[in-house]
Image: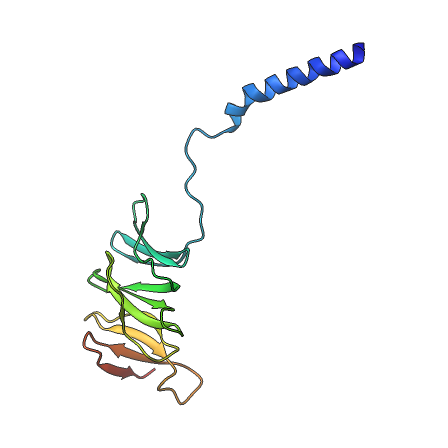
Length: 158
């Protein structure tokens, strides 16, 4: 009986110690939200990245991220135009991935390619979108194509 009473008292003391020590092990600051963030693009103070299959925007100084897209397809590989007003990205909306553009603050995506394998690579200083595609390639390597806002294409030699 005496051993049983001592074990019970020891259990109470251990529980009390754990209860009192718990605040010492928790951090005083709130931990940042951990997640899986991919394919970031930055322009000025704007960062656009992929998470949960959608595009998100956040200020480079920090803060809460804002969902930019919420379509059923997956969006990734972002690049922001030189003026910071347009984002180009790869999306699976209508079958194979294609390049789309939309305003940085959100809006309706506009399909820019119909190649089946195009990837956004960046922008020219004058605002033309640069994509890589094998559509015009005679070699196994992709070609760079410049797309203007009216759908015109110009091939860039490598």
